[in-house]
Every structure is written in C-alpha cells, then in structure tokens.
Length: 496
Image (cartoon, rainbow, N blue to C red):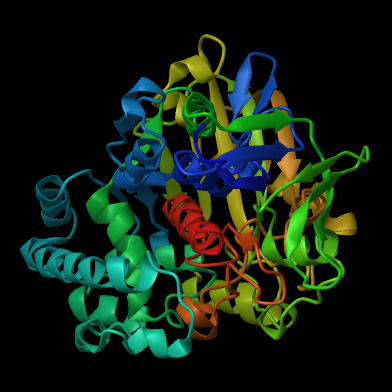
C-alpha cells in the first residue's frame, strides 16, 4: 500500500483556493468546500435572459501564471480554457479640458509605439520605448524577489541584498506619478501609464514606483479574454483540479474552522449542517479580515488586520442591452474625467464621490458575442467609489448613483435599450463577504506590502493558511493565482 497523503481542506473555491488546489493536487488529498453552486467566488457568474455576466474581474493579464497553475495540476491550459489577446487592450477617451481625443492602448510594443507616435508625436513614442524597458527591468527584479515569495520576517526584504538594491536603483521607492511625468510630457499619456495604481488602492501621486509592475502587466504583458467570459477561468481551473483528484463540494457552507483547544492546531472544518471534515491543514479563501471574524472567531485578528487600510470600492452596473455600441468602441473603454487630482482627493482623502468620475465601460460581447443573445451587448460599467468607511449613505444615494451611471453610459453612445440589469454598491460587496464593502481588499501602501501585509499563516494556529487578495502578494487575478501557489508552499512546509 502507498503512503497515506495528508489531507487539506480549502474553504472557498475562488481563484485563490482553486490555484492552491491545483498546486497541492499531486502531494495531498484535497477537498474544496464551496458554499456557492459554481466555482469562482468573486469570479462567479450571473446568467439571466440569455446574458452571461462576469460580476467580478474583467481584465486578464499575465497568462503565463495561469498556464503554470494548470500545469501544477498536470494539465494544459488550452484543454480547459481558451484565451485570446484583446487588441486594443483599452480605448481611452479624454476630457476636452486636456485636449480631448481617443487613444488606443495596443497589444505589443511596436504597435503601441506607433499608436503613441500618431497620437502624441515622435518624442513621446521614444519616451515609451525607454519607459517599456524600465517597466520590464522592474518586473524582472520584483517578481521572483518580492511578489512570488513568502516572507517570514521584514529582514527577508534584504535577503538577498542585491535585488533590494536594484529595486532602489530603478526607482521602486520613488512615487509612480513622478516617474511617469519624467518620461511623458503629455498629461493624457501620464494618465494612461499611471491609472493602474488604483488597482492597488492608491492614487498615482501616492503609489510607489514599484507598483508600476501593474502597468507592466497591462501595457507590456498584454490583456486577454477567455472564451465564455472570465468565469470560464474558474470553471477551467475547477475541472483541471478535479481531473487531478481534487474533491470539490458545492453548496458546502463552512461555519467555522475547528482547532485543538490545547495546541491551537487546526483539526478541520465544520459545516453549517453539523458535518465535520477532518484535515491536517485548512486553507481559507475567504477575505482575510472576514475569515478571522467568521471562520476563526476564537482567534483574534492580528494588529495588521485590525488597523488595516482598505482600497476604495466601486459601483458596478451590469446591463444586457439591445442596440449598437458607439463607433470605435473597444472591449475595454476608459472615459477619463477632467478633474484628475480633485477626483483622487475626493475618493481617498474625503471619502466622497468623485466630482468628475472616470469610468470603465467594458463591452465583452465585442470579443465574445456568445455572451449575449443575437445583436445584444453586455455593458460592464464601473465607477470607483469610497468603501463603507466613506461619507456616502448608500441607502439614500444608491438609486441616484445607479441612475447617473446609466444616464452617462447612454450619453456616451452605448445602447440604452436595457433588457436585463444588476447593480452593486459597497453594501452588496459587504453582504458577499468583502470587508469594508470593497472587492479590492487591503490597499498596497508600503506598510501593507510584502512582509508588512497580513501574513498567509498565523503562528497561533498551526496548519492554518490564508489565500486571496488581502494577504500576500495582493490584489488582481495574477496576484491571487500566485497567492494560491504561496499558500500551497506553506501547506507543504507544515505537512512535510
């Protein structure tokens, strides 16, 4: 008889949990307990009236990380999900106060250079070449040394010392907004290459240059989209994990993680129907602050969690509509507001709605028409908003903000004959288990990065591991997939 494999229970079948399952399938008996009836967590699915909406992430980058996740389960990505490049990756529409115009963020450096040359001139095109080289060097230093890595101590930042010195030399501790301005004179290009700081919960003027790695993922590595929508990634990972021997149980709502009273070591998970699932390790894929509160209530959250600063949230309007899209519309369209600095001050300092909000309008049916009935389109309209610690009274302002988003989308030329719609605000995100009502987790200020971010283990609870956007390495689909790999490494350390 072969050796008995250690058992790991994964609470939640989101992208982080599924990634951990794929990375553990060969060495452990893995059981995923997912309360919903489909995989994906935030990358779930809303199907209504022939429309298939992705209510979570809408942008897929760094597809090599996704491919590696499938490979960890002994699978080839193309056998489970088909992905295609999105080109243009974004259409940026600018306010008349800064010259107006439209700019298409193109797939590939050569195409992007020519687009910039046409839009802003030869000097700015040459600046992009230098900027792209810098982004690439930054990514190559950061990924193995500071992103795809578990930290046990702050001292690990300087072990080995050379990458830390190289990051310093590259300007990783300068401000992102200042770095971008040094490269580009055109304020419109400055927006294009710095707005990604919002993914990290920061204004470009506040974000460290190190977070330009997100800009690298968008503008150098490229944007992709799966056939069947973003939820197809979740379905594919679940299928690959299952094929590798992982047991996935849907409709299994975990009430709490059970620990030994004397040692604190995890013993397994108890479902809300009383069933106990025994395990050597438990990986929790719930939002980390909520996980401490609901799943391990006998374990007080660490100070880093109690005092955490959260990323802004968003209002999201999903609509299934009849009619044509505006001429030139792309899969992803960013409509920039004119009051750039004032908007960030309102959002992140004052906790109020942006005075002239920039919004994202994605039309995924331009890439995959099968997501909607014939001659219909899906609109994914997102406006950044404060989280629940802000000043907006959502019970009073929800209806008006939804109406404002719909009105503005129609005025921009998108179809207004709405057949199906859903609207989400921070109170909805909170009900779905996201702390402070933000789907973007903890912000990435320096004090919440790397070894300063809430850890994916807790020494008081041997065998307990966290995965997801509020632990290492952070927010975004690539980061969450890496979070699953890092969680799997922790499990192996604990059970070897």
